[in-house]
Amino acid sequence: MKFENLNIITPILKAVYHEGYTMPTPIQEQAIPFILEGKDLVGCAQTGTGKTAAFAIPLLQILYNEKNNEKGPRKIKALILTPTRELASQIGESLAAYGRYTAIKHTVIFGGVSQYPQINAIRSGVDILVATPGRLLDLINHKHIDLRHVKLLVLDEADRMLDMGFLHDVKKIIALLTVTRQTLLFSATMPLEITKLIDTMLSKPVKVEVTPVASTVDTIDQTVYFVDRKDKQNLLVQLLRNQSIDSALVFTRTKHGANRVVRELQKARIPAQAIHGDKSQGARELALKNFKSKRTRVLVATDIASRGIDVHELSCVINFDIPNIPETYVHRIGRTGRAGLGGTAVSFCDIEEKGYLRDIQKLICKKIPVSEAQTYSLSTAGK
View 1 (cartoon, rainbow, N blue to C red):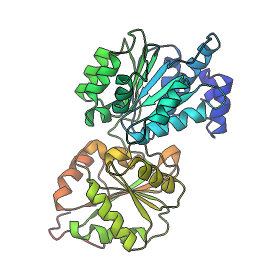
View 2 (view 1 turned 90 degrees about the vertical axis):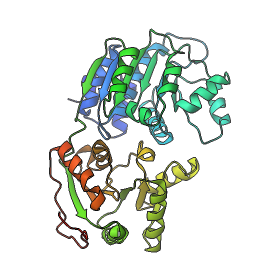
View 3 (view 1 turned 60 degrees about the vertical axis):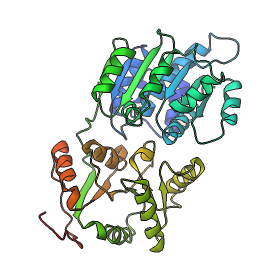
């Protein structure tokens, strides 16, 4: 199936082709028709499946068709809630790309930066508002934002919003919206709290589920190294001296761990930057920009900060620390091997992480091969 088979209007179709896309992903193919029909929808899809376009394209089309019959100043008609600044920025970029020929205006608001440019953008009139919950509530409380005209609500990365403690804020925001709205909820996992939220927020939603969270992309070459914690940094340097890895996203468990890894890589003359919650917004944006443009070869990230990182042709994901939540492993390695391309996922496993590795392998129903180039080993082996 091609995008033109989804009844997408010409201005958006032109923009989609301008971005180089002709075939929709499964989540786009399944979700877009239901959204255009005005149905509430629950989309369960992991990172890298194209879910941003799955809601951005039909949302732009609905507003474009309505715009022809409206007069007067612009009012916020669509609200997209998302947990992190990076993800909000990425959604804003997607709206700009797919809506380039529609004259639909959007703006993005999040904390950590001055609110005044955001307030000015809203005052000038926008059709779509992309926001993180905290900054949105702050501007609502100061009477800068009016949500009474919102008829389309998107909750993106709902499970991550839950993890970050935004559930109460989300409920407060929803209470300000009209009950006749169309609501779309996208989440990589469906914990009980999300199911309860769906029951209270959505009206007879259609459920679309693709690439279950337990699965990993076949094009990703997965490998594990058993290594003592004290040797992980040396192993990382050794791997990254291989110039065939032209870009690597390295995951650590903590912010301090990310900073430490970057310091050691820089000592080894390997260009690296960190991205995590303690970095300023400007520093995070610069690090991501440098990584996308290949000025920085290695980006070291924590899981929360990594949501919204979308880098085309990322060659390698390295789990410096193995995650204690198995689903997180799937999200991490899903950053590579996108759009049918190949990719590599490498994990460093110390003695205390062997239980995490077993849980991951049980979830994905696959035994991750041990690297044949096993330079280091566990002092208490037992592979």
